[in-house]
Length: 193
Image (cartoon, rainbow, N blue to C red; front, side, top):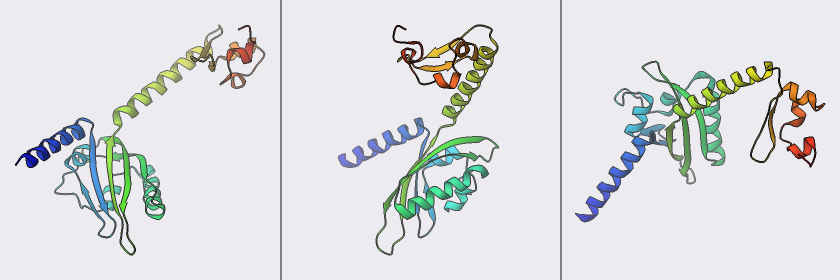
């Protein structure tokens, strides 16, 4: 009874962690082409578990057409070399939404003459991708403003390496902006900087 209670408590903690982290667990049997998914996978993908065909190809059909070839290559590499699977891709949900997912998997075992068993997780990284896209847009907007700013502008990191130099700034130093990137102030201006 005590072992059973401990097991249930452990399962509940795992379920909460997976749901909170928007992480689903899956298992694929190559021989039967059976893909078994946790409830979190269905919540992330928006699929109805009763309508899911249960084959790897059924999942692959959810993948954005531009990402499918990469997914297939990852599966082939996993089976051929036993390399781990790590693949970011977009899926189309039945409700019309698009989600970004990180899929990770490992070959659990393969014995002589037997098909592979692959265990893995899928993580919803849509929020992270949205933040990255927003950051890129802001960076582009800032660069546009700086490019047209009549003054000189440069950005350096904590180690005083140039990360950005406006054309006006680099022109003042007689350099091209790309020739400054990654170099320190001392390397560009001199040790007295």
